[in-house]
Length: 369
Image (cartoon, rainbow, N blue to C red):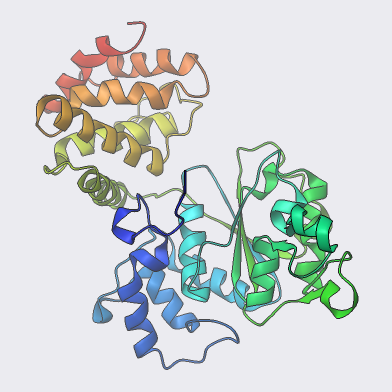
């Protein structure tokens, strides 16, 4: 079987940002007359506009958050320090990392996925062992990983979930970040030193819930500027984001009806209350230990829409919401399912609207009910 790596953009489930927003990036480049850092595809002003939007150029807002965070992040990337985005799961750190890389380098695909099994070879470089055996170490037998490519090409490298990597693996970034050089000791002479080209930098992300987020060495911390990405504080902003993102996902999934706004209002309200442990009228309640983030709310809204359309040919309902919430609530702790059931029993009856009554009645659909 032959596997083709060239996939048309319209056949990709999720094209990278530089493909999804190619027209906007082209307009920004054409209109960009501001000073541009060496090696960057756009100026800081144009890169900021790509992320936060520019109505005059028809550039959409892609990240909901504090614009000053974008300013600080871009300034960090223009310095000799890396950028570390820290926050709760589901606060769009990876999305922001992707958008920044697309704006700065025009390429967001030089990505390292951190994990317990991540090795230095997956970060820096490895070898074509057939060539290595037949020819010995050579530039031809070298297989560059994202870090080496980013340095050699002057591009932004994304390191997702860096604190899930073992400490000794994280520290392979020390020389690339401080001295802007990567040693390849197997190669002779000048080929054994890769010096970073202008434009190279690293954007890393880390979840505050992960154990190990504080285990980064002090030496590596000094080479990053830390920026915290906070959850969306405003209800209307979060609702609008969930509606837009879920609607886009449903269209790509073949659903031709828009998600019901009244159902989405119930969804976002429930997520915010289960996230904080307090209802809209101030009642204390059990807070779920699982992640009730905006990203999870989008995923549930997508599932609700799919359930309604493909099972009944209609938009998803509040009853569908009860079933889809179960998969979110019970991820981390079995007790969360009981907390969700208590929420539906005790904190939905006083709400106005048929959709709340429908949600309360559908609590019987929860597993174990």
